[in-house]
Length: 307
Image 1 (cartoon, helix red, strand yellow):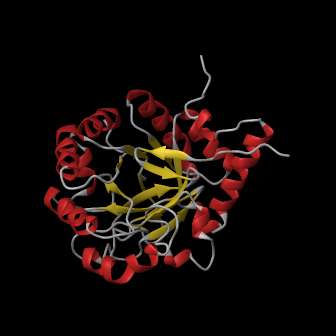
Image 2 (cartoon, rainbow, N blue to C red):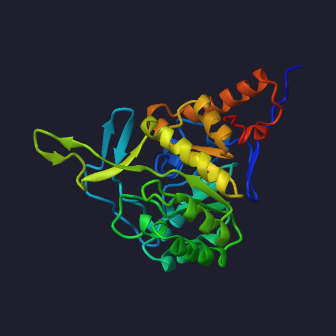
Image 3 (cartoon, rainbow, N blue to C red):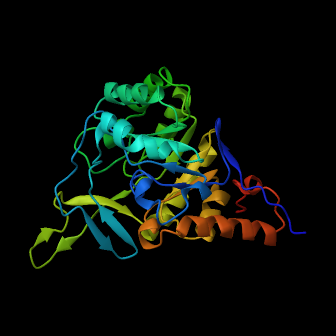
């Protein structure tokens, strides 16, 4: 009889049967991938961003492939709170895994109104608070540029919901540890990092940026070393769980983040390459644990040996 492996992890009160989450922005609202992958195999699904009002996003071109990655400038396009409730939530309720809604806004009051509107509904298990999008003029990184502002935002949200709050941090501002500590103090249950790095691609014949907005957010394997280092640093600085994001394509990638201190991981860009990436990663994690005779995957969290 083979070793029985427990892949489950916890993000505050949120229990996941395995640590593999679909990352916001690369998986739509789940239904877009439902014919390609069994979503109920995952640890959970994090939706595309939801803002108070519908948002068309940035003008195209909005996506361009880069060496070892992808640059996007979608601009948080979404149907808004009412559109999400009427058009998207019904499908998400049919899932048997936790559903985490990514929240965006231009002002603290907008974040609060979205969470209050969602908190009345069944089928939502937690929120990922996006304070790190580099592709919008207002909101986004404004809330992670100052730890005091980040604290105020999370404190305001903590007052209107008891559901888990996962705060998504930016690698672009150089103050990620101070912001991480601030949102932890404000009542965040977990952190996810990193969001995309700011980048640019130029069409040399046209002598113009390829993306209409000029810059965009870089994701994919190219950012993995940066994400890994920041997860390692932040995990040592806070007491709440960290979710690793950035360039995860294989179970080995996921294990690197877990050893660096991540409790769970998110898979984003890889889903565009192979929609079966996440089930493959889950299977690979189980196989690794069997081979290494590890009964609980959670025993590996922060198990990096160095020095």
